[in-house]
Image (cartoon, rainbow, N blue to C red; front, side):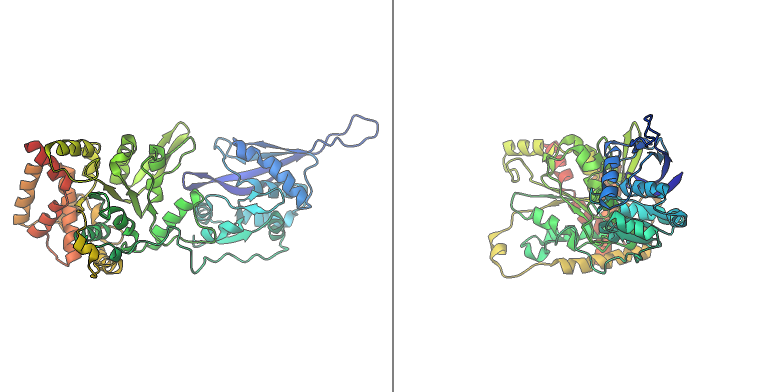
Length: 520
């Protein structure tokens, strides 16, 4: 019996799977000629799904078209452990290698190689290899298991090579894989490409946005502190354009963050071909007709949703009140906890979802701010589509006014993305010195928040009065303090004083609207 090590993708994690192969010789014919009964075949067990069961047909065709022998007897192929469901076509190549080893095409000298390498790949009928999902997770798993390396389709080798400490060999066909394990061909380890194509497209430059300097500052605050932001303004005021500029002012991904993002995109097969480590922060902008499963993940076979695909990046929800209410409410836990938990009968999966939410909305269904009593009632009804607990999780409610004609005609350009990015990086540097790397102000909680965002006495009185007048929650209290701390960092100020609290309260537009409506 022969074994080949591969993996099963569960969420974005790789779990060990062993391909075991045992062959029974062909039965003798009952006829007088003494010939063998031509009933060779492959029997597949081990809880495979339909795409795995179809591997039998693909493997036989690939072996035949690669001029390699097909089984004459009956091969039983077991995908162990038997209680773990196997999905997808990634088992084609390891099954083919196990069958060839059983038949002696790969001799005893190959056993050492097969024991040191993990193998995965989808076979075309002509023996060529097609890309698979999850090769980055496979490489991380193989490294943690102490394997020497992995063999994957050539198209997946660059993204798998993003994992350091493991040798990744890309093969283009079944014949190349056989030659590699038979030591008839040297395939050098893949090197991560020096330059990767940008997977998320070029960001808009904020210099092209006219007359919205106050909103730009709010976006710089969001980028510096990792705060969620909601842009509220009439149609055509530049909300969407500014939101799409966010990736251009965010700090670069750290190596650990880049690997996490690459693992997620590898698990859904979304890493651009030829790309290695994803170095740009993700920017996801689902349409407002997206379902809750599309936003937070799920399905019969759970897969990451948009909030996980935006991990360490930006999730942009345009026309926020138009999204299904259930989809928006599903965002409450990941925005607070930084992960999504999907529970199914087969088990529970956790997807990372540490994202920055940037949303945009018109103040009313008509598109503009209210000016009469009837318009105010319509505006209140439209904003009422958003629940209080969801709005509590958004730190900055930014009012975006219509751009005046003079600003559109003027030759003066406002702050550019490069200008704001420099300020954001300086503010992040202050946070790192004070709190450590990977801990922006938006994640501060408990004693850490009390320590780094202690308020001066005048600021305490102002915040106390605002909480009473606006009816703010304890969660909003902490979020205002975090924003005030970021304002101080962006301005290079050590203490959190009255001016910082005043500006932080200025970014609670919806709270002020609701308080004003309650007083009428």
